[in-house]
Length: 210
Image 1 (tube, rainbow, N blue to C red):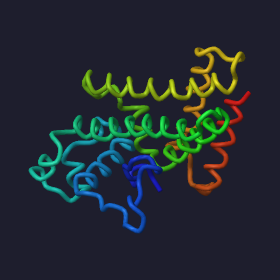
Image 2 (tube, one colour; image 1 turned 60 degrees about the vertical axis):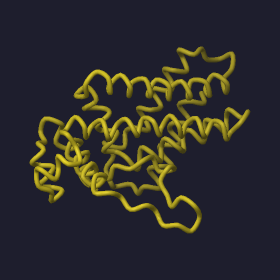
Image 3 (cartoon, rainbow, N blue to C red; image 1 turned 30 degrees about the vertical axis):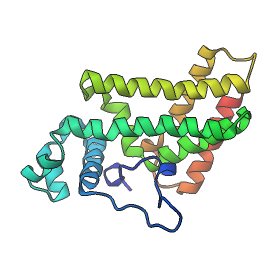
Image 4 (cartoon, rainbow, N blue to C red; image 1 turned 90 degrees about the horizontal axis):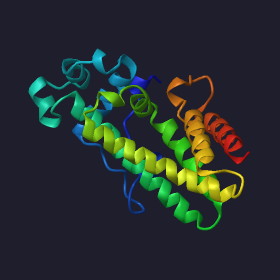
């Protein structure tokens, strides 16, 4: 499956059926268009895609497309800010669930992020290559959310390796871990998803636990 075919989704743990027994919520037409736009941006680059390209791929005419989004910038904002918010919220939730067990907190953080990275390679590609296309304010908002997410990992690492790592050193390790886990846009399909998840988890934990 190519990046262009990947869906824009909330992180895997925040999707689902809601209350037990209910079916997952059906995506809106706006969400479907955003999915297509993100896939195109990720494979062709922001400047390589026009609104006409997006409309053609989505089967939507120009006026109908602008009914959902003011333009390409609005699509990038709609794709990147919610994901950054959900990563931060999901990271905090998992740390809280692990309570006073830093090792368990780290393991669940790694599981959480690996699942996100495998489910959302197109979104990761946008973060890596297209974030600077955004206007100042949404870009600052995303950077702030990213920094806060990193600090959740830093706090977990310094608690786990107390007296061994400074905050700065833990931050270096956290960014290195993201480099490992966020490699999913560059991974081929020769290894099945379950095994890819196992390899990414093992490599990340090995890098972080020392």
